[in-house]
Length: 117
Image 1 (tube, rainbow, N blue to C red):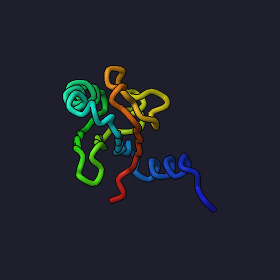
Image 2 (image 1 turned 180 degrees about the vertical axis):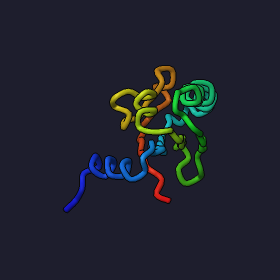
Image 3 (image 1 turned 60 degrees about the horizontal axis):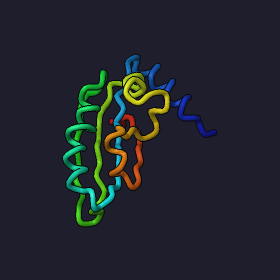
Image 4 (image 1 turned 90 degrees about the vertical axis):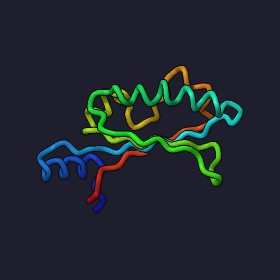
């Protein structure tokens, strides 16, 4: 029998008796002609937005490679689900794009993980 994500989460919390940190991996494919402007705005707006959020623990900003030249990533670590909800709202499982940076985004994705070991 497959367990739902909610059941697994509740069981894990009961076993650990503490909040479970969540890793959030945000990927964005940018409009290539806006690369330079995106990089300037990303560090001053997006990174600042995450860094000042309650429950935020750490962040890594990743630049493109030759294999995906228009794709960037932000890997952030959050104290728990409540911290992510405080940052991104009830729909925290979806990408958060600050209004001033929306024009740079061609596509984006977000994924969340609990530490395994």
